Amino acid sequence: MNIPFVDLGRQNGKVRTYINTAIAEIIDAGEFILGERVAQFEESAAAYIGVPYAVGVASGSDALLLALMAYGIKPGDEVITTPFCFISAVEAIMLLGAKPVFADIEEITYNIDPQKIQEKITHKTKAIIPVHLFGQSATMDQIIELGKKHNIPIIEDVAQAMGAVYKGKKLGSLGDIGCFSFYPTKNLSCLGDGGLITTKEKGIYEKLKALRTHGTQTKKYYHEYIGINSRLDAIQAAVLTVKLPYLDAWNNERKMLGERYNKQLNTQVTIPKNMHGSTYNSYCIRTPVRDQLKEHLEKKEISTSIFYPHALHLQECLNHEGYKRGDFPITEKCTQTILALPTFIGMTAEEQDYVIHTIEEFFKQRTQKGL
Ligand SMILES: *Cc1c(COP(=O)(O)O)cnc(C)c1O
Image (cartoon, rainbow, N blue to C red; front, side):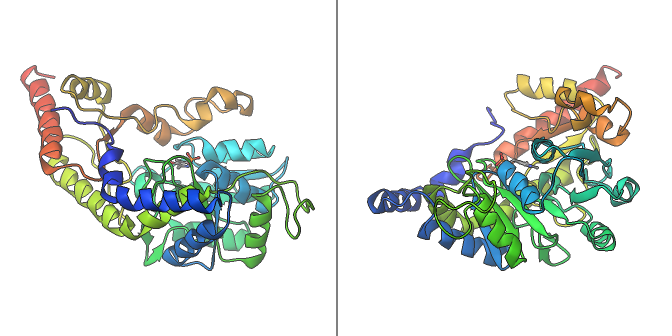
């Protein structure tokens, strides 16, 4: 049986006729940039997350960049974030000339460790970016407390966890700003790139709206700020408006897949610890024989991915920052042992059973060989 890592066709197929209609309407109306469709989606997304304001932007990466711009991050500033992640947050920090300061992760959630954040705070720290990795919240209580105590804004990277909840509140409503991505494999996704920023502060909201469209706050062709061009397309906003009502059901489907894996795989591998109601945007296991397992699954036509194979502090583009191997041991250990299994909307129980069975078979064969 051939098991893809993700099959987007199954999810999009469920809403395809509605999407077709919504796109046709936009073509007829001819309103492609911002306008009513984008405003309508921003309103529903803000209500869904439980904040007064949301701003549609071109991608999750731009959401992070614009969030830092809104808080005036500049050269000489330090921003604390996790070394175990996709590069977007670090990229945004460095594009503004600021310094990424890493704090290692908690081994049980793969998220940034509040204790280690505390050790890294200096008078230069101007923002903290916790990432809710794989669909599960970072330990937000302690992070928010640190932000309040030191007067540092908390920028949540919610790219992998839209709809996930921490102590009764939707992620993206806990910190000062929430950054979302609608990249096709995220919990809520569009048909290309897209992103969103949520905020509770009117001033930040107004500034973000200006920054995403060349720094224009009041009048066209008058520029209060140096901004960028980063808007959510009307077509993508229309697609997202169609899909948003399905998000909770889709997240539940992911949760059920995750829990099913958890129940079946817990003796052979390290399963993810579900501390705060993970939405399993990715389902990741760990094993010291990760590469051998991946190879075995490939032979059986099961696609897997590694999130992430190389820690951020060891990336070539950060060489000049002077980090070295051994600086963040938990992150480094995870990059060597982690493996993401197929988990997607529309995955059948039969397909999941085949993945589970193939993993069990791999470990049985190792035992037989005396390994
Ligand atoms: C996907 C992702 C991003 C970037 O989003 P894009 O829309 O692809 O720019 C940022 N952070 C995390 C944790 C992500 O998973």
